[in-house]
Image 1: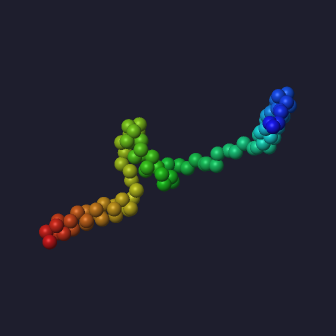
Image 2: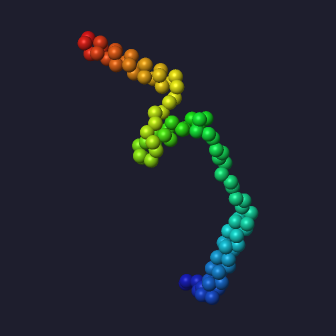
Image 3: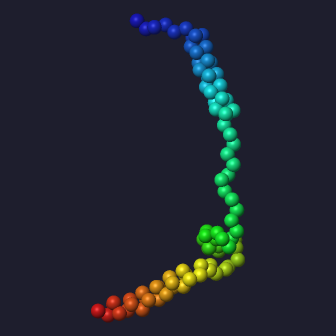
Length: 94
């Protein structure tokens, strides 16, 4: 034997549930506070991401072509590359 449901009662329960959900969402929204972005401006001279940004702009073609100066670190890297290139032919001869 199947239970008999009253369609009006089912509709009332659905409306109650929907209104409770809306009220819950409204309570959450009213208690929420707007968060401000947690960022601050850094000058391009002090930014460690400025060289990366310049390279990206060069690739996109948006910015002027400028050399990315990173100082002594770049010099050390190029010296290491030169050293490896000098060693490579000697390794191939053996």
